[in-house]
Length: 133
Image (tube, rainbow, N blue to C red; front, side):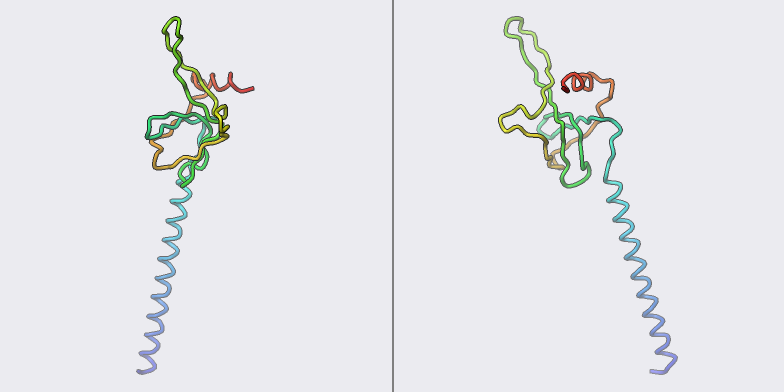
């Protein structure tokens, strides 16, 4: 191999190394932007979540978009029937009064069908405000 051929070979190797580094940087930037986009910030204090089993909960949803979302300050609605009048009514219940006294819910993201903001002037927001000590 001549001196000139070795020079071209070295330049060719450097070009491929630079192309490889550039591709790695582009891939890292793409992954970083996808990770950053997966973190959702909510503009309302409470969110409503619907799970695949039909359960609806209200609370502060944290780590949404991650593998381990959690709901804190959790509320749910129970329908009660008055035995005398047979009329039904909905009552907002704060989680934590159950026997195991949970203070949060860790949610399997595959069971989370959708998330909606709870409007600050909504009936649910008003009931939560009344329930707070």
